[in-house]
Figure 1: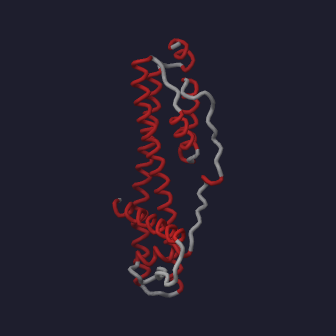
Figure 2: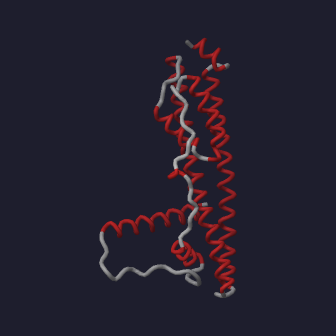
Figure 3: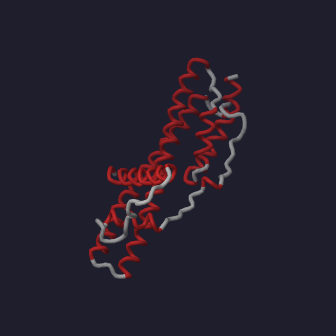
Length: 216
């Protein structure tokens, strides 16, 4: 069986797995570079917002600050997507370590539904689509997949890139220490538990983004 696989995929399985890992690590390094660039971009954008805000609250100033805030929000969304991509790549790399261990003992690669799911998620990410499509084809030949994973994108996976006015106001208020933007006052009327939970989750999500930005 091993001889047949070597003839079919053109190289020993152990070497093939290590080649996949090299490609995954290379993509992780690319993501790290993009994250570093995003961090610089976010900091510059924040400084620009503060500078404009300190010059007054004219219509032109507010328009410039709101435009910059939209860019900042998009950068944060991109950061979250890249961090998610890197986590998936690291997860897949660890699973390949397990495959290498199995290969040394049993001489074969095991079929893995978890790996199929991770590869499918990575294929759906535009910046990784080409690399992961190539790897998935090789994994199918090596026996990890029985059939090709789908490269189709679900509509819910697409980044709608929409920015709400309320979100812009909140972030502007935070960055400019209240000079621009606004935050909604606490409601004086009773609201149901579901609405309260949704608002709390939104606030927590904003805090997570802020903490990530501060850590970088």
